[in-house]
Length: 51
Image (cartoon, rainbow, N blue to C red):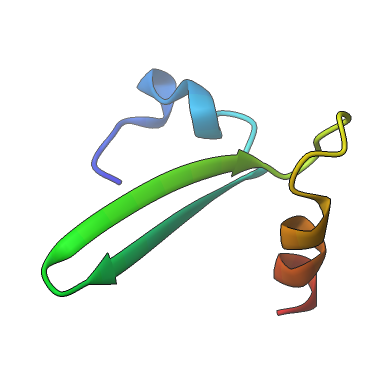
């Protein structure tokens, strides 16, 4: 990521995951907060923790 940490609200606390998938010249990036309290993405976050 080409951003200064002061300008990057999504990763300022250092506990977000930035996942980038590249396929056939296309790229998609998503950010997921590591410490969610709403239960969303629980399975994905569990999988990431196991990696």
